[in-house]
Length: 192
Length: 226
Image (tube, rainbow over all chains, first blue to last red; front, side, top):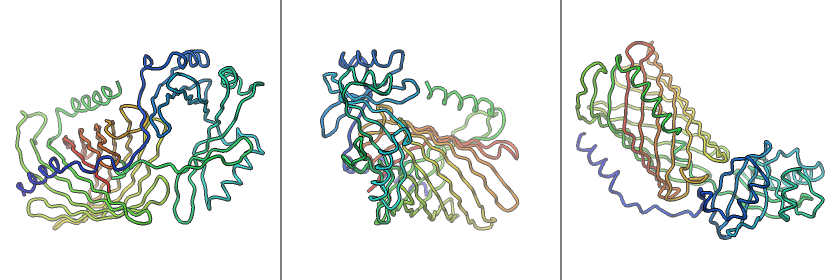
C-alpha cells in the first residue's frame, strides 16, 4: 500500500491544470483609499462622516466601477462611482416593509405571478440623482429635489421543479425593470 | 490579526495538552471530484490518504516514524433541495493494512453567502462496519466559513481563507466518544471549479475517557468540479 500512497501523491500534484477558467464572473477586489478618485472620497467624507468606508473595484461587462460600502446611522449603503469619481447611484439595504404599501403589494403580486414559490432574501432601495439630492437622501431619507427611486430585490424563486436565485429591479411603482439570474458560486469545498 | 488569534488558540491548546495524551502527525492529501448531473443532482468522488510522520506521547522526545496509514475512497450522490442546501448519501471504503472498512454516509448541507464571506453548515451521520468490531455510528456537525483575501468574493486566481470546525459524537458497542476538529486552511482558486487548499487539520478525541488523542495533519485538498 505504501507504493499506492506515493502514486496518489504524484497524481495529486502532477495532473495538468486544464480546468481553469471555464466560468466567467464579474471580478471585484479591495481598493486602497489612495487609489480612489478624489471626488469619490470627498463625497463619502461629506455624506458619511466618521464612518469606516471599504472600497472595492469592480470589473464587469459594463466596464470598471468603484464601490464604497459603509454602515451609516445603522444602515448598510453601497455607493457606486465611475472611475473618475462621479457618483452613479446609492443603494441602501432595507426591509420589505420599509417600502410603501402600494408598491410593496405590486411587487409581491408580480413575484406571485412569476414564481410558484418565492422567498425574498434581500431588499435594497436605489437612488439616482445629483450629489446634493443623494446627500439629503442619505441624511434624511427624503429630498425635495428630483431623483429616481428603484428597488433591487434578491429572491429565491421556484419555477417548475427547480429553485434559483434572481435579482429583480423594480420601479418606484412596482413595475419590473430587469430580471437577472444570479449565478451561484461553486459550494463543493464547503459541502464535502 | 484574526489568523494570529486562531494560531494562538491552537498553540495554547497544544501547550495545555502537551504534558498528557498522545499525538500523531502526518499529511492528509485528498482529491474531491464533483460532477454535476441532471435535475440538480451531483456526484462527489473523494480519495484521501493518510501518511504518518510521527506518533508518540507528548511527554517523550519527538520521534519521526514515517509510514503509510490508510486510503479512503468515497462516493456521495446529492441533490439540491433548495437554492442553498442539498441532501446526499453515499458509501466509503477504507483500506488499512489488510483490513477493509465500509462506511455508509448521509448528509445535509447548507451554504449561505453573506456580504463578505460564505458560511456552510453540514450535518451528517455515518455507520461504519469493520470485521470483529461492533458497528460504529457517528453524528457529525460541521460549520465552515470561507473569506476571500481580496474583495468580497473568491474570484479566479485569488487566495482565500477557510476555517472548518467539526463536532463528532460516536457510539461503538457500549463505548462513546466525542471528537473535535479544527481546520484552518488557505485556499487558492485557479477557477471557480478548481481549488487547492492547504492547512492544518487538528483532531482531538478520547479527552473525556482518558488521555487525549491529538492528531495534527498537514491538510492538502484539491476540489475539481465538472
